[in-house]
Length: 171
Image 1 (cartoon, rainbow, N blue to C red):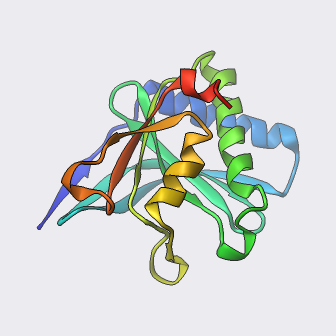
Image 2: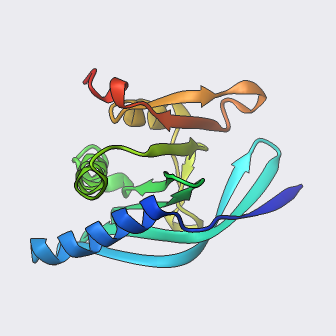
Image 3: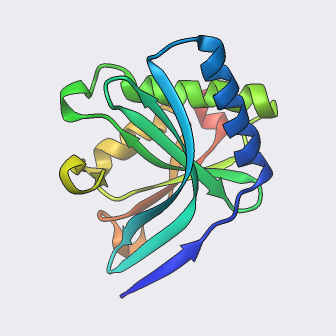
């Protein structure tokens, strides 16, 4: 069983994307690229597969590590992917990508918007697929202020997390 969700741009997404595109030019570096494009992402929520169609912004490092985010609701952002090749895990790529995003969020908005993400135990697709334990994923995102909000009957195959600024201050 499956369903399709269409997500529209929101002002928060557009402001943060514009900030990222400008700041990459200011960094004058070939180590980071930023691109915006329409994507189809697949999320498996237990026995239901959901295809999300939306614009996204992708921040990519020269070694192939990347973070992708998209609009969420009317005023938020959803981090859809933080991908770091297994050989590069534990070397700071994921931390850098999220920190770079957070820096641009605060520069462009002055505050953090509503943010969420979904952990499924996998990252990537096809030949880039990495099985990554949900507990490992949630532990990583907790360091950046995210907290589990929805376990229910789909845990440990699916976990929804939301951003809580007060928890970011705990680290």
